[in-house]
Structures are given as C-alpha cells and as structure tokens.
Length: 207
Length: 171
Image (cartoon, rainbow over the protein chains, first blue to last red):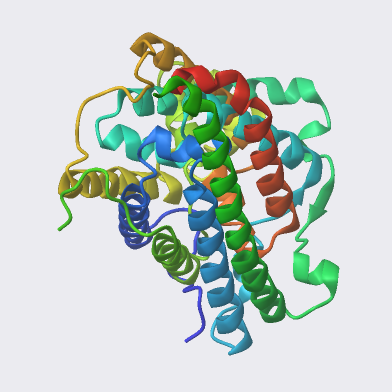
C-alpha cells in the first residue's frame, strides 16, 4: 500500500474523508491543549525570551514529521509528490504574510489554530481572536483584486529545500534534526540570560 | 489523568506527539494541518447566506465555493475536531474555565480589543501567505517547502519586532 490513500485525499469531501478529518483534528486540538498552547501567556513567552516552549515543540514536530515523511518516501511507502503538491511557494506574499501573522500573534496572544483551542477551553480572548481571524481573511479576499499581481508574486511553484540544496530529502531531514538539537541548547542559554537580567532588575526592589 | 492546570507536557514529547498527528494527516489525507482556511470558509458561508452575488464577485471567495458548499471542506471538519480535542484536553486537565487571559493589572477590555485586532491581522496575513502557523509554518515546514521556511522566519521576525510594544497587556 502506498500513502496517501486515494479514497481520502480528495478535495471535495466524502463522508469518510470528512470523518477522518474530524479524528485528525481532535488529535491536533488535544495535543495543542496539553502542550499549553491554549494559554496566551505560554505562547507569547516565546517572544519575551522567558520560555521557548513554542519553538521547542514546533521545531520538534517539524523534525518528527519531516523524518517520518522522508523515511517512508525513501522506503517507497509514501508518494511524497502527492503531498508536497499542496504546498507551493509564492515568495513575496509569504514574506509579508509571515511578518503580519507574527505581529498579530503577539497582539492577540494566539495563532489561528491555538485560538480555537483557547476558545474551546472557555477563554473569551481566544474566541475573539477566532472572530478577528474570520474578519481578517474576508478583508484580505476583498482587498486582493486591488493589490494587482501581489497575491501571485514570487511564484516558485513546488520548490523544496532539498531540491535547492541538491540533496536527498531524507538527508536534509537528518541534517535539520541535528540543527534542531543544537538550537535547543541555544534556546536554554537565552532563557537563562533573560532570567538573570530579570533577577538583576528586580533585585533593588526586594530587601 | 493529570489534574494540575499548570502542568503541561514536556515540550519535546509534545512536539513528537504533534509531529505524529501531522504525519498521520499527510499519510491518510495527503494534506497537513491548518486553521485559517476553516475560518475563511465560515466567513464565506455567512456572506453566501445573505449576499450570494457578492461571493461570486470576489475571486478568492468564489474559489471557496467552486467544489460545492464552502463548509464541505476538509479543514472545516478538521477544525470541528480541534474544538472537540481542545475541549477534551482542557476538561481533563482542569483548564476548562470561562475567563479572559490577561496580565494582573490589564483590563479585560484591553485584551478583547487586542484579540480582535491581532486576530484580524493574522487573518489578513494567513490568507495572503496561503496558511498560518499550522497550515504553512508547521505543515509546509515539515515538508521542507521553501516558502514555508521563509514564512516561518518572517513569522518569528514579525513577533519579535512587535513584542516590546504590546508587553503591557501581560503586566
């Protein structure tokens, strides 16, 4: 059997594929909640250097799924192209979009996915972030025709880091895993530095 | 089950769990995880109910109705699952509680305004970049898409650039 399964990988949802989507989403929501990502303070701590949990969890997830897909593809069990076709590159909208989403993240305290988890656990600020995201996506759709070529600018199609570097996908996944472990050590050093700076600032106030 | 509301999974084990959920999504459905796409579909469905002609006249909205009703879409159902899973996780860990998360001296209304504004920004950015932190950075990133890694870097850059200005909502 070669993944992804044809029966489930269709754009127009069948009852079966939509049921599977609910199951996958349930796992996604549960893991995000248990990771602490339903709580805004845990998420934004990343950007104040006090707790780099977001970076650790996200990068570990990228490494886990990256090793999994490239290994299964190398073994002939996964048709990598059938999956990667869904992730084309449009360079300029992705540069600007990334900056804007990052800015919105520290203002709201959530990302679009984690705000759903926060709303489901009773957080009113999470629910209002969800409402904001709905209005934001609609606003961009209204604006997009007026932006001319921007939405499709920097179109590189299916461009992947292993193609750019000319290495096998599995080799890149292993290299990224090594880099991840090294940067996790660096993240710990940054946290320790921030904690020391905070202790110095608080010291004169305490007896 | 753990009942301490301040205890979370170890970040690395949580990352492995998240990676396995993502891997199963690729294997079973050929697509990753996402969120902002479902929000867009919800908005398009609402507009379609009151002004179907307007949906037809906006290209991105019309695109969301090409294959039938805008809500009959994998990401919408995945997000129904995220609500269920998030609720289950919060309920079983003692974190299910009606409240507004904010700093000790911050008014709830400040957070409400910021949540709407920040959410609005993310909606704009995610629609532009064809995905958010889940749909682009995580799902595209794990496939080593060049654009997803550019998005990932810019996402962190945007967050660090603005973090200092909005720090007071947590004080």
